[in-house]
Length: 139
Image (cartoon, rainbow, N blue to C red; front, side, top):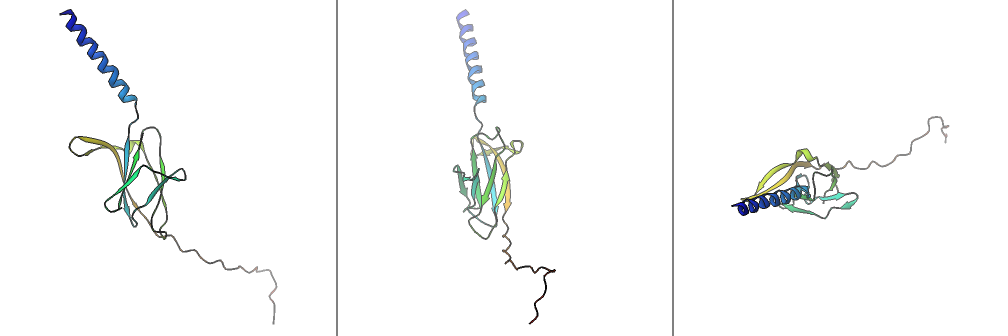
């Protein structure tokens, strides 16, 4: 009977140690962005294209995968495939991530947002400005 108590005690202690290390690891998360106005927008992070992303729904849904969403605030610049549209900057907030059920038993931490791309204003041609104090030439 004494041996049985030791086996249970060792099992409980080892489970507690293993579960403690599991919580210390990185917590992956995803950012789901619904794209309006343009499809297949590429995310840029720190002036380089962010590689860990994929598209769903014919390019209208962008899924950005993060290795650890709790460690910092990520700032992405979304550049659309249409050059006439302007880029948009999005920011992640660890408090906005929610547990989302994907499949039967799989859960993910997900932050959802919608982005609407707008056309860039056309560049105005520069017109030389005349100095009002300059004398006017007569013909």
